[in-house]
Image (cartoon, rainbow, N blue to C red; front, side, top):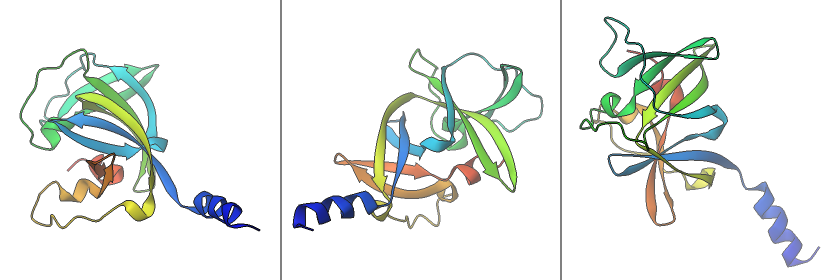
Length: 157
């Protein structure tokens, strides 16, 4: 085997995960693309009384009732009116041994990246109330991307 073949094998063995990235408040966030079921334009949701302020309500998605969470509100970011770029990313995630489907409202979709696991850096934001939702940070094309931990994010508390 020559050096070129070894390089190819080493690259193929590199553990990577694909992340869908989106923009909120000028920052880029990433979520595991395997959890993404669908990306939809924003449509109003039916409000649910006595729900947390970040829960916008529910939508009927082909017969399935899907709760909708506004990530801006969940992360205590300033309110922005919804625009034609505002989308709902419908996710399916296993949490606490059950499968949960939920939509998250984001400002705009950015890109899909293959990210080597070794490039994901942990955070030291222990004092930040939102740090529990962060899986790690990664630099992609000279931009910092905040990778989210969906299992924790979609757990209502």
